[in-house]
Length: 182
Image 1: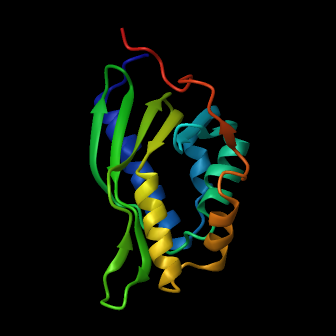
Image 2 (image 1 turned 180 degrees about the vertical axis):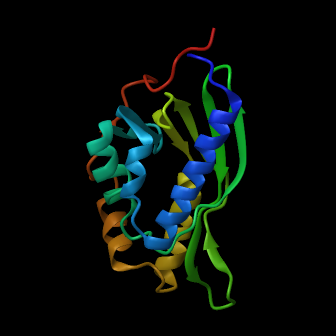
Image 3 (image 1 turned 90 degrees about the vertical axis):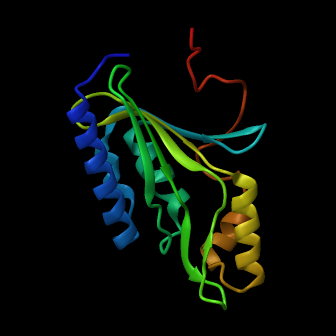
């Protein structure tokens, strides 16, 4: 993995976080696809047998930033910490997952646990690889709580029913998403 100037990686994260804020404001995440290389890979794990994988800008736009974000229009994902490794050209950003909907006491529903993204930078202000991580058990608990409180919208109710039967969800065959560190 090539080294990159730290100021360039810091600028990439400024651009990324600004694009994230625009997506939160509009509910449309698809413009963020321009921040990926044409052959980028975006993935996350959903337990011992299932992975989400989008390969290339088209799948990232349609699946990761499209169908996977449907029903989450009111949600915010503020970054709370960013770690930059300019020697490897990698970044880890930790974020929260906060629903726009509130409980009767006024508090926002929030997925507990650590959420974040691990990025590999390719230069030219684009990611070539992104791997998200978050606590799916806590996500399920929040969606169930929202459902029981009548706060889970119809799109999310349908997504919960469909589970991993959406575009991009694949059977996990091993740990091919990472490189062995030697």
